[in-house]
Structures are given as C-alpha cells and as structure tokens.
Amino acid sequence: MEEAARPVNSITIVFDDSGTHPESSVAVAACYASTVEQWKEFERNWNDAKRDAHFDIFHMAKFAASQGEFAGWSNTQKRKVLIRLCGIINTRVKVGYAVAVPKRIYDAVIQDSFRDFCGRFHYTFALRQCATRIADWRRKYHKDASMKYVFDQMGTNHGKGEIMGVMDAAITKSDREGETTGVPPLTGYSFESKTSILPLQAADILAWTILQQMHERLSKRKINWIAQLAWQELASFRGTLDASFFTESQLREWADKYLDALIESFERKGKN
Image 1 (cartoon, rainbow, N blue to C red):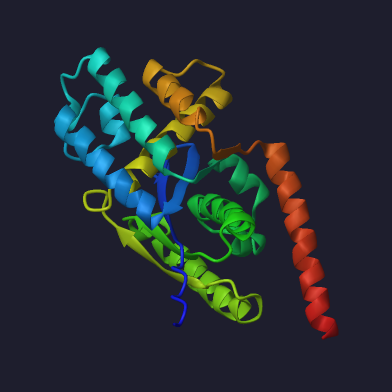
Image 2: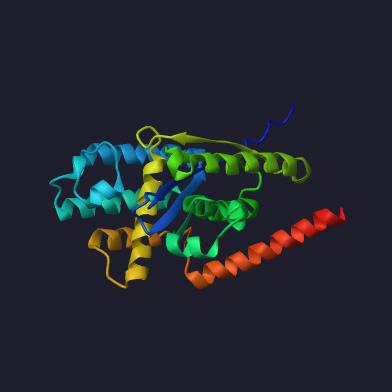
C-alpha cells in the first residue's frame, strides 16, 4: 500500500501598520505568524469574545479613544476585554515581529538613490525588516511550510504600490531559490479587510501598541494605562515577540552594513 503524502504545513502572516498617516512622527509595521489551523482556532476564540463583549470589529485606536462602538465602555470593561483578546493572541500565534522607525530619522539617514533600495515609504522599510525576521524564523523552524502574506487594506498614498513591488520580487526570488533548496516558495499575498480577516485585528493591536511604546521612548513620558496594559499582556507571550525601536545610531549602523552588502553584491556581479 502506498504511503500517504505528509500534509504540508501552511503559515500565514498577517500585517498591519500604524502611524503611516502624514501627521504621525513614527511609522510602524507589525505582524503575527501562525499556522492555518491555529488561525482557525483564533477566529473561533475571537468570535466568542466578540459575542460576549458585544463588539463587531476591534480597532485598537477607537477602543483606546472610546470611539464608535466602544463609546461609553467603562475602564473595567475595557480591561477585561483587552486582557482576553491578548490572551487569545498569545495562545494562537507562533511568533510576532514589529519595527518602529521615527520618520525624521529615516529621512535624515536614508536619502537619494539609497532610499530606492530601502523603501521610499517609511512603512516599506519597517515591513521589510519584519519580513527578513520572518524569513529567518521560517528557515529555522518551518522550512517545509508554505507561506502567505496578508496585509490590511491600504491606500496608494501609503505605499501600497511599493509594497506590491517588494512582494512580487520576494515571490520571484523564493521561486528561484526553491528549485535548489526545496523550501516551498511564497504562495502569494493579498490586501484584505479587518472585517473579514479577523487575524488582522490582532496585528492592529500589536501595531498600535508598538507605536505607543515608541512615542514613550521618544517623549520620555508615561503612556496611558491602556497602552501599558496592552504592552504588558502582549510582551508576556512565551514565544518570540521581537520588537525593534530604531534610534538614529541604530539606523545609521544598519545603513552602513546594508551599503557594504550592496557594494559587495555589485562587485561579485561585476566579476561574474
């Protein structure tokens, strides 16, 4: 009897942004990765929480500001719901990554043609940093898994076209490398609505929380209790939650290393 093929594990990464509007001084990309099976369990848990707390779409900024369907909620109710939602996230996700970069610093360090490599939009840079970490994690722990990216819907003025270019290039590269490594190529990417793709609401919570953390670091002022509680709960995750808060010195160090790598790559191509 022929042995049944082993099912292929499938990883989905959900991405959200925060601070990409022009008025914000910081841009954030945040993502969570998990298996398709665990995301299904996440949706079941999340729908239970929605039903019990009587909300439709969890949007962290509106929740913190008591706007929309969260208007009139007491602090006790908010605390209870936020702790429950963060608990669902920590139970169902495999890993989380987030990158925050001050726009002024990025504009000062990443300039001219070098910006074409790094990202014209601040969010593109932050997203690529997260994607690099995701790729490293996948190679270590899920090299046999297929992988798909899901982004929250975004406007073209926030860099959607640039993100699509980055992802198309990543898919082409993974197809080419997969022929020699055997690692399944990226299966694709999409821009979806938080209304229908519930895991995007988890990424929204992480992105907003990281934005508040970066503002606290820059202003040296304590953030409000909701932002503190969200960070406390998300940071208690027993898996990997890697959040990077770029300072000017760190960004300059990264830029020097990246430039050296680009020069080395061009020199190798010239010799070949």
